[in-house]
Length: 382
Ligand code: ADP
Image (cartoon, rainbow, N blue to C red):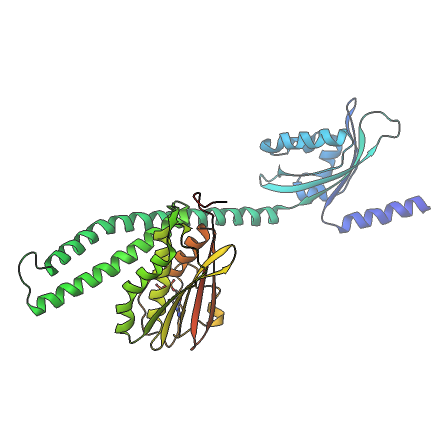
C-alpha cells in the first residue's frame, strides 16, 4: 500500500468513527452540484442508502422539509458565492420521521477562478437538542399563559367581590351609627365584628386588585406635588390606636432638611407607609415602631420604618418581596394576610423610580427603607 492509499484508509477510519455525516461537493452555476465524497453516515441520518445520494446529487434537496427549502436555497447561494455558512433545517427520513440537522460548510474557491466553489460540509443530527428547545419554549408559553390567566382571574374575582363588600360595610356602618334605632351592647359588638371583617376583606381584595394590575403593567400613578410630612402625620393618627392596643409606642420623626413638597403619587406613598407600619405593628410584641422621614442624599427623600419585633431570617430576606410570600416563623403570632403587602410596596416604589432596602435580624427587629427620587417640581425655581 503506497502512502496515498495508507492516508485514504486512515481518513476513512477517522470519518467512520464520528456520528456526523461528512461531504465534499462542487457547486457551480454552470454544472450544478458534483459530489466528490459522501460518508456512510448519510444512511444513518436519512435512512436512505448511500448509493441513492451518489447516483443523484439533487436527492438531498428533495428530502428537505418543504418549509425549510427557502433556507436551504439561501444557504446554497451563499456557498456558491464562496461564503462559508451554517444552517439548521429538517429532513424527511426514509421511514417518514422528521430529523433536525445542522449543515455547516466551509468553501474553497475554485482554482480556475470561475464562479462556484468546493464545499466541505458536516451534517449533524441535532434532533434531541431541538426537541428539548421546543419543549422548553412550549413550557415557557404555557407558564406565561397560565400566569396571564391567573392575573385575569385575580382581577375579575377581586372586582366582583369589591362591590358587595362595599355594600355590606356601608350597611353595617349605618347600623352602628344607630340609623335604624339604638343598639343593645350585644348588637353593637356583633356589628363591630362584621365591620372589622368587612374592612379586612376589602383591604385584601384591594391588594389582590393592585397585584393583578401591577403584574399586567396596568397600574397608573397619579403624579402630583404633595407635602410628605402630611403622609407621616396621617399614618401616625391612623396607626396610634392599633399600636397602643398592642402596648407599643409609635414614634414619628421628620428631618429638618426634607423639602416641604415632593413629587410622586401621594395616595400610593401613603399606601406604602401604611403597609410597612401595619406590618411593623403586626410583627412586634413589645417595644417601639419608629417612622422616619428624612433626606438621605441630594437626590432622594426617604421613609424608614423600624421595629423591635420578631425580625426576618436572613435566608428569607431575598424572597419576602415576592407575591404571596410569608415567613414561617415560630414567633409569629399573627398569621393574617395574604403575603401581598411587601410585593405591592416594592412594585409601587419601583414604579415611582425608587428602591426599597431591608435590614433585619431575627429576634431583634427590622428596618425597611424606601428611597424615592427628588423630582424638581415644575413650579420650583431652577
Ligand atoms: P403579609 O403581612 O400579608 O403576610 P407582606 O408581604 O406584608 O404580607 O409580608 C410578607 C411576610 O414578611 C410576612 O408574612 C412576614 O412573615 C414578613 N414580614 C413583613 N414585615 C415584617 C416585619 N416588620 N417584621 C417581621 N416580619 C415581617
